[in-house]
Image (cartoon, rainbow, N blue to C red):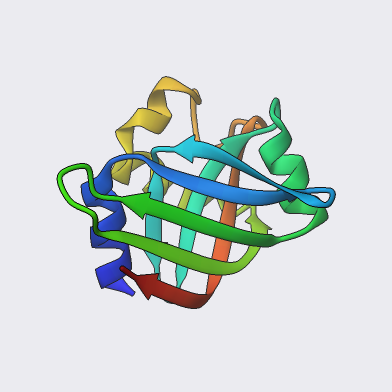
Length: 122
């Protein structure tokens, strides 16, 4: 799993693809964390991403290195995670989150754990 997170972090920006009814919806993300066998992404309650992940947890992450044609696609199932200690760790590991949320206890700070089902490196 560490190979995945290292690759994505090298890319700096990655896309999270959710289902918006019958159609995919992609948006850029910048914060990702790995713990155990799961990846974690953060979002907030003021966008459609969290609603789509709550309604249907099927998700893909796509990241491409800027200076090459290398890319990765991660397919998995996302489930909301309310673990405050994990949120604290996420904020420490990805300081950009501190610009958006006052604390790990913020009701707006939503975190999703992704159980990885498939990984493709290209």
